[in-house]
Image: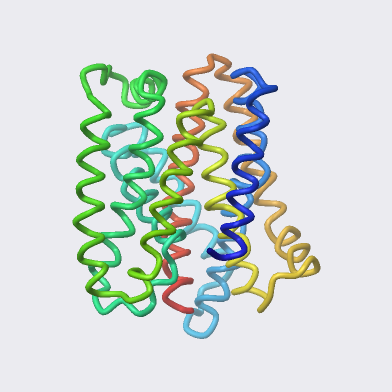
Length: 294
């Protein structure tokens, strides 16, 4: 177990302990706050990452890169507006791979890149399905708001079972392709039990925030700082934060506008996740490029 994962487990159970003193209302508020502070921040330095990734081979100006990035986000919004069901499915696939790739980014010895991608995607989708299963009714309401029709007949227990079987099958393939993976199977089964406890115990937003921030965003920030500046130090974090600040603030203002315009809880939550989805598309592509460059 790495030091960062030990830290994540301690923080996760501390966050669950806080549940004893917080009502669901305050759990949701705390969840949104930590997502705004760290979850949004971890994707706010994408342009700096892209500039470094493409520094040697690209003649594109920073302005052109920014325009391309915004166009991808805009396309994501249009897709959610015009074809929300397709957009949601793409978001789940992109996010599933992105979460799985971040958690399993040490599979460098894999003999089969395709097996790695399938496994990382099924791992991320299984984490999503666990979260959805433990908060089925609320998830159905949110998804119905996004895609504009009811999904009340969908059984998340069967989806979780199917994604679990897919994960087991892809794990068997990965065990043949990567010694690193085989050495980490047991501890990662333990992590899945930790996630299940978090998802079952906490409110939906607070549960998502714990996983998204503690197990995804903070490790990603650490990795990005190492890539950009060579090492994680307080000074380098300050550089990272300064570089990301303007984009972070713009994103927060966008979310604030959504909240002020759409004060209905379920509708705002649906729009919030749609916003996350739109910025996930370019972010995932840039992180893939960063991993390939490394």
